[in-house]
Image (spheres, rainbow, N blue to C red):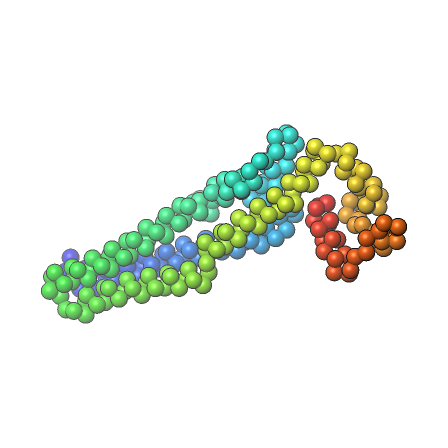
Length: 229
């Protein structure tokens, strides 16, 4: 035991645990970045999670059961999503375990060095290695903000499903005649296409037409294109 502490193996083990936690956090952070890129165009994304969510969501409406709580729907699939065979919760637990072992090892090494009357530099090295490792972990957390990325991903997914996909599916399934009339009124008929947007110029020329600024037209066009898929 004395040689283990005196030869700085304990301090090296503490630093190794901290490095392992940083590596694990890096894997999780990279995964969240990939998911955030995929959710930007969730309706057309090729990412397996996004495709599965949209298919499951659509199937609920095809079966006419709907999705009353989109928040829980998204949270369920996020919690079951696996990275290298582990869920995000498992990765979080692994990181917490590494942090705990590193702190206990650092503190235990310092106490052991003091009890065994070793050189004060051994105790200092043991404690400082723990402080340096934990400091590096905290710096990584500040720079990459894994929890913030998860919240951002969750909000983006809920926003698309709740505010874009859900109204579209509700209209297609429960209000099909109204949607057909809407298509005829606002969209030009073209085979295989439904992305024609409102002809603002002709609408504004009508007696009761509403005039739009160029900026308003651009926003409305984007909303309609997104809504109509």
